[in-house]
Image (cartoon, rainbow, N blue to C red; front, side, top):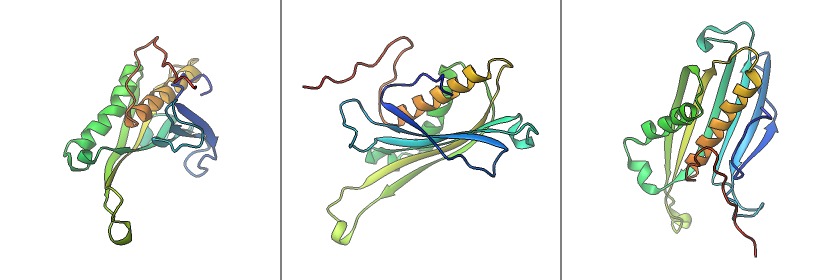
Length: 182
């Protein structure tokens, strides 16, 4: 997964992997922090990416590998009332996988919009809407190319996280210009 190419706004960090889901696992947390923000600023999107491996190929997985992911970002208030928000969130995942020309099987997941309104002593806070996407899929990996293709799945998930954060897509070969510091 160290071969993954991601945008500079995406920060990845290895975190403890779950131990009960598969004999082998690796997990990363990710956060999107635009280049004009500092290290101390809050991320505008966060998530986790877990790669599981079980040589016994659990039936629901349809293969020996499974990716389990979570992504969350604050959205515009209108999204909380949009009946197509869930479908849009799911399509951002499949679009990212398709854009990377990846093959996958047995996709599963949920998209949840959470609207928070404050009352009483907190009533001055504006309403917030968060979109959460929980998804899992089986990467179909070519023997001998597992490392590169797994890295590409991580890169696609990173693109999904950047999409949730509201960053514009970057065409292949284009590099984001980071903000100038004065």
